[in-house]
Length: 121
Image (cartoon, rainbow, N blue to C red; front, side, top):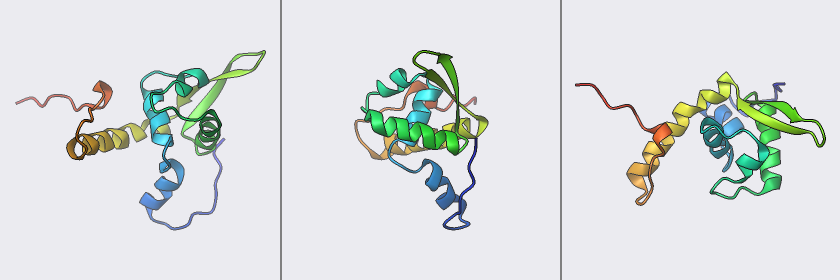
């Protein structure tokens, strides 16, 4: 369910940052792109997202139309998360951010899923 809320401006960058500009959202997108799908898998991320923050981000991302949740267990209810098309489109943003980090932050590396394909000559 996507929620419409009042925007602070008509700038697309500002509006995109309202949805995905916090410290954790793009890292959750990264992990979903890597094939992680359950709360436990997402909580096990190397960055150590606190569980209360993860739960909040997953709710926000679902309200923002970036992910969908599907129950995979009834008692207790547990959900699998998947990116929507809108969420998958953030992969290009994440790849660009990873390339920027690699270029300007020594000691970082780009995960294989965000590397550009080799150019054909």
